[in-house]
Image 1 (cartoon, rainbow, N blue to C red):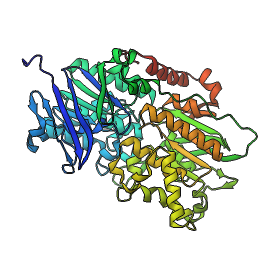
Image 2 (image 1 turned 135 degrees about the vertical axis):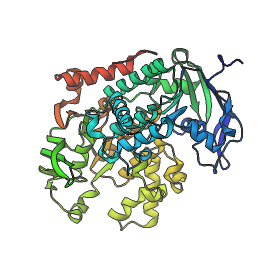
Image 3 (image 1 turned 90 degrees about the vertical axis):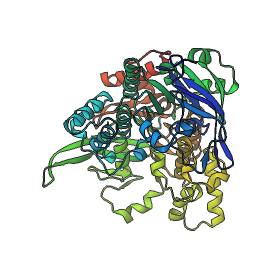
Image 4 (image 1 turned 180 degrees about the vertical axis):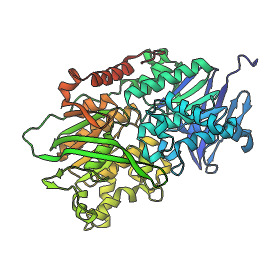
Length: 541
């Protein structure tokens, strides 16, 4: 094959094993110059493992390749030296990881981390590196990028961290971009911006892309070719429109049919209020100068009042950085705030750690980033059982284990996996472990911070059904934070739309979805609608 017609990336009969377990079984696909190939499939199907193999980022051992080759520009990467791979990584091939908090260095500023990539691969330093960093942050939609240069990852929202990861991956304008769920943490408006940005860069640079996602709407928008993975194998592949309009494999048909059922919890005005807040504020000081004087505040939550009744689900939506997660953390007293918070009839604002302990069993949270929330040194069984040991110490070891097994089954995980550790699971599986840890205590109030964002479509629909079933069985009260408006519409009784720390609009979810009054709310809903209905190659703006 001549160089012009040769694929940029050619993967043939690739197998990946972890010890005696085969995670990827003789997978083959190729990517032409300027082409976007999407890998879709359920969590644990081998998508990310296949992508990490391209850059040789798997732990060797225990990972190995019993068969196959990975040729980039005609060269087999599996036989390349580590020095050659270091030159390729970040320069010729870049990757956007699924979980930005674990991929960014918590000890370095955003400017330092992007500047390091520019310095290592392009030799750009000083003022030129700073200018290029500002350009990249602006391109990926970071507001007021000059104020974020000296920020650390923990000072950014989940969506903002993901945008920084995208900026780092695009810094040296690679020939091939591997995007592993790059829009998972992004709200619909920014998601549209990022996809439009990636499409523009592909056109301008002729960049190729391997796009890994569970969102089929995104696949139709951005990809030319789709490979459907299940059980470590590619069960169907072809042009996107062909596969989507006439799927041949039963799994592909199931994947396309998966959708959360629109059956939200009804409003319950006669029920008691489980949690309420009045004029709640969370302001973070901005410190500058040698003496670190406070020169201003970031008003993450600015005068929010809410009340959630027993058995209801409060949906909280808004763009990344609008204060959704900060509001949830403040209600649970996990960060400092001003303003009364009443939980189960008691004012918990100002209570100290020991005073809060009796309330902790009845309030739980499922975090957005499951890998950062799970201890890497604890087995899954110990993680799920930890809350039982603290809040229900009277349970015997057998009773605790039985509760753990039931919680794992409830979230679709095998009880036999309780002896494994978090790093042995995919992102979606880790999120289900986090949900099991929360529901095992049978709490009254659960804050769900993007609990389905890391899940593929099949398990997303199953998880929504599970959350709804748990709510009805145990009369649970939810605060559901999400950028996925389809999921929010299927669960929420009441809806608040946040913008810049304030409530832009609120009301019964069924009314607000049909008749939004605010221009911002209409724009948010319109972006979500376009993302769901756009066809292959269309770009929502």
